[in-house]
Length: 210
Image (cartoon, rainbow, N blue to C red; front, side, top):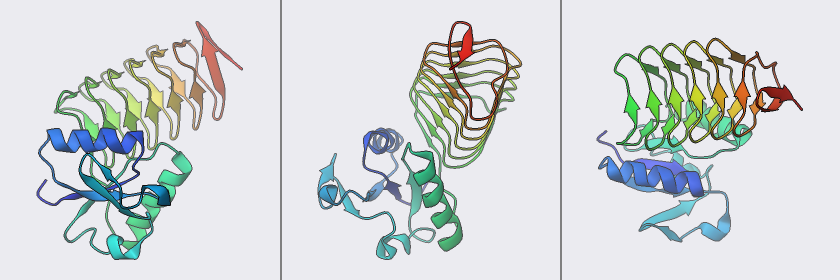
């Protein structure tokens, strides 16, 4: 990656993203964040330049600078991705930790955050703008749709189907062949042995709807 990166979001995910780009020898141009208290402060010597909708900075994206959206709130994240798609005609780049293991046979979209020690196995499919946290495993032929969040140490087994916007808590296990519905939530440490409906929340071992 030759162009520097502008990171949207200066919170914890932004700091993790900065570390990933630093480890990969990618220059970070700056942060954008809507918290005005952060403006003109530094995070690891990188300045928080202004708001996420500041046209003065948005206009450099695509020609001189790439973008990454490091925000956990899905609604806000979708809005920023839409701005980048429609106003700048660009897609955010991926931020993949150098200690993550991503198979060459896996298919990965754009704007994904893949943290340290995460594993994405052969023929797995990860969509766009997902968060794969530290130590999570996406096993062979599993599918993870756009804007999904896979918690630290979670195990997504073979042929699991994770729908758009789903949240899988830390340490959860999704057994082979299960479908997790759109915007569904799986609690930390749960073991999911049955399909989870859209918008449902489940927790426990075995996971039950709550």
